[in-house]
Length: 86
Ligand code: SF4
Image (tube, rainbow, N blue to C red; front, side, top):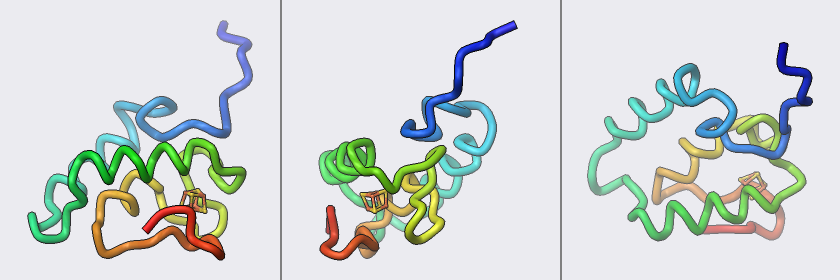
């Protein structure tokens, strides 16, 4: 039995790679190319989320989005005021 406490400040990719994150990966892959954030911007956004106290179990506690999906869309911005990424 694994008695480690789950990390609440992790991304879905780390918490649940074969569960919900698989669906997020599929949704992200289906985004039109002109909507997908370039990989460097996507990683920068997720780095900001990893450092953010609003991140809970892969979700943003301000907007309720899965941050990996929100960050994948170039048209989205961070809902924090001020935004932590654009
Ligand atoms: S407030 Fe912004 S940086 Fe923080 S978890 Fe939400 S989307 Fe990520």
